[in-house]
Image 1 (cartoon, one colour):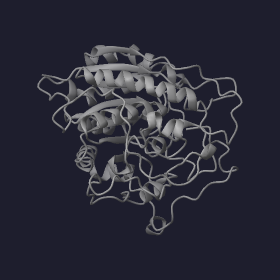
Image 2 (cartoon, one colour; image 1 turned 30 degrees about the horizontal axis):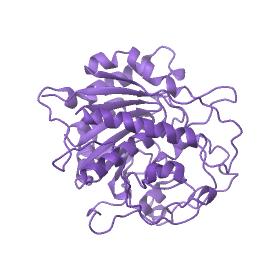
Image 3 (cartoon, helix red, strand yellow; image 1 turned 90 degrees about the vertical axis):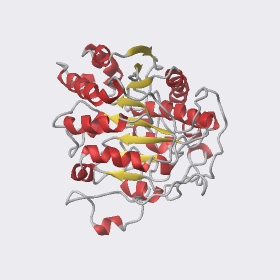
Length: 395
């Protein structure tokens, strides 16, 4: 029997800076724009509704105040985790339509609850044009959760976002695979120091999207299952300029389709989220149509009759929504308001009983677009000055 998809809208824009002083980010309109292109009927998906976010209002936020909209994002993340958990409890495959990348906190919380319930670890495949790894250990201050989401879900940053329900981290560093970042990503050395493996665009293209998806499966072989995060800014701006932070050197739609199909073609893939598409930059709907075509084709392994039902490696799947306190790893370094944070050079590790063996732990770099051997020998990114971070309230 085929797996039934349930589409849930999560149109939060709380994690981005305002594009102008008098406007708000347009990515909250993305779910509607994608639905208008026939996404649900083409996927034969159940409509799981919309989780309406709080009002976007940066107010008098100033550098040094921590993450903007932190309380609202934390509340929204808990509610989103409830909705995702309910979909999984029905045996369905959630497709969550963002919204900005801060919705990853809700997905991550849902996956941590699920991992606790089944007695296993849930992994993350992070497909994104940026590492989103800014945190108090490598920047003078933080501001926009959509530029800090990977740091937050791996336990770095202020506790009201990085430790919702006392859970920290939602994903262990060893259970994260990052795909599609640019070869010169600002935080690539911090990811390497943390032991988070990456495959930047040059390596992804050299190996091919299908083989890269298989490689990601292999890296997460010790996890009970995994979640897939897709930020459409992984695409090159020549084909997808409708994002808040377009960055040259991305992949093509065809590559994303093959990558997505390979990642979901296993019962251990638990769901997918799609983020950062901004319909304000898509006046005729052409980019929305391209995204829908790619998603429908990429999710074909889920909707094909005879595809395997979602399955976690542990035998039994209790309710994924029962709150369970996690065994929080030791954290080091002061964060905003004295909260503990995990230093980028101190990977979170559950010890020898939970850490998996890895033979490919360093970021891959292929061709002239990648860093030189000398750059790989550098120390992790130093903390930046406030002058360097004038645009920190941004993706």
